[in-house]
Image 1: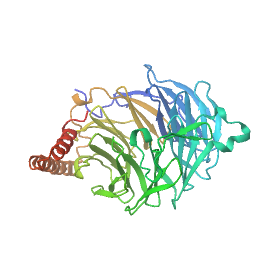
Image 2: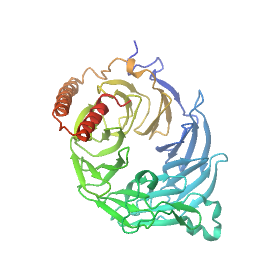
Image 3: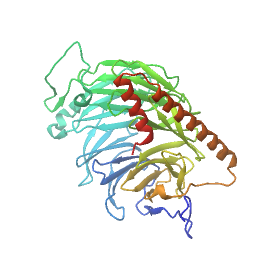
Image 4: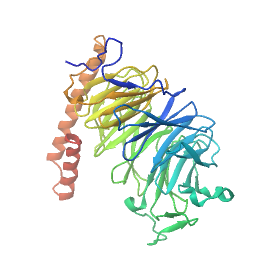
Length: 440
């Protein structure tokens, strides 16, 4: 029987498929980006390069190295046949992945680039210089004479650096413009189309998030309430609700349309570093060494995923499994519904900074500069892992948390039985319970 942290005779985890040390970065891996079809993974590093990796072949291959930045690569994005990278050197570069050549350098920020989003028409960036910018993605129409026109909007208003970024398309989200209702689309610099409903949301170290009209560059709402820097953000699947979290340990839920606070969820004991929405559930990872699952409709913490010995710096929920990466050098796989630890992936020599799940393979990037590939098949069939027999106190805490979670679930079921009689109320409660029971 396979156990979750078993090792082979050479000391490696039996789940380690590949350790790409021959083609490894020469510095810490900071970030990952994945192509839309999942066939290409890109990693950015402190060695000033980004590397492209195949994910559809039996053996993961390094397909090319993108060299040109003058400092660490801090974020990456992919669109079509291009890779977009942001760096501590304050620039953004656009690369032709087929030739590994830089074809455009976006200049204008004055500090580190922290986040990138590429929509196919725009590149949005967030920087420690307290601004976010919108750039033209299709640079073919730009010459060296008018390179300055690549930046079409600058969003100013934060008092400290911006570390979280969300783009909401006007097509999907709808326009909230009321003073100037227009059916026509807007053209910027004769190169790209801006929809009146396009929105950008920025999260800052100044403790606030802000929503912006991409067309006008004007501030729409400021989301105030956090007592510490905002580290991560996401939205629900309908792009109507905003989730923010950060250094103050709290998760706040906001109505995007009016900027009003809906709910605060407390439970983590330290800064929250990452989050992901899966239907009606929110998953978070924290410096308090745990990941947690929340029913957002009620603010209930229904699962706590323990065993990490350091911060949970990244997570990915896929195929009914919660994958986490930790500062203790391990990645872990938990059964999402029960919270049970099913596998521990051991092998990195330093903290794990990013991870991705692709076709039943887990990819992890670490401060040791190595990209590792792990077997993520058949996790549901694995027995529950007890990482350390000496960790009995932590096991008792886990049992107590599981008891509390069962009580919470019973309470949710009771509330479902006693919900009001309107069709809308019943449907909302049933949808929420469906999210708890079945979100695969």
